[in-house]
Length: 455
Picture: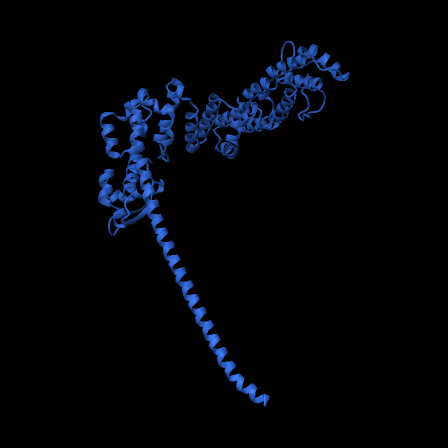
């Protein structure tokens, strides 16, 4: 049977459109035996009569037709490129008339995550466009959107397209929390979603987003399951990613996760390494490495290729700790670090100190000014690696100093205001007295003249 027109208009009754779609699928699959159209005829005939007579539709027969159509729709990915989108749109239109469209939509999504053999170049774009159509035809609170979004992310990951991922990011940034709430996702579903986004981001080269969603996935693990194999695998992955990521210096979100805390028992060496990168310095790292080589921290040697990157990161963090310690004093002269001090702490020649300081500034850990003349670094700001009671006490102390300074300023302003008011009052009094005296003299001068005029 010849294929239908490549331009598919979604008009007509369910039975007519179903028969047209079955004919199209037969044309693609070219069955040697019974065709889909022949198989559906006994089901479509009574439906057609019900539609013509405007009687109640037998929904069970309609669902049976859709089961057969959706099962046979695996061949749609072999359709000519220009026919794929209208063909899927027709299938979506038919499925929306099912008693429960969700049971069919998930299967359609699985088809779209597979390669489009007729268009290797634009297959991913076509699949994303079709999935977007499905997504946008559903109500915002429809939980089927969750599975469709997973399919969209899967297509992006398989394509490896950074442009496609970048196009999706603004929507995820603005809508993901709302979607999670509207779809009422449980912990496992939320974890699936965050891991899917993390995988797609990693393939697209967006390591920041990948790390962010790995941590989000970690926090979906309930405390009761923190020691499970799944939790352990995810915790190791997230921690390894954070340690080797060149821009991750804050490990507090990781240490707050129950699954990461559970590594204290299952992966003691890895957890000890986390504690060093959280709050310790190069000295502690070198002592640790001397007894526990990087190759022995994880069974699969995942950290071995990153040994140099780990040492670089701990040097940057060590310098951040030195600078943070220098900022605790109110003495401006003590807020500087000599090149000699920095070189000793980082185990580098003094000639390389400026390079390490600049790298730490670029990492956003410190701010300050280098002085080649005095061979020192004046610290303006430093990031605290651990913010505990000691740091809160320092903040409280600084706030008290600022409060006293502001009180002194307010006292000076108040005194000046009172002095100005007194001076203004004094000037006003003197002016009034002078005006009164002048008026008296004028009146005394005018009185004799008025007497003479009267005579």
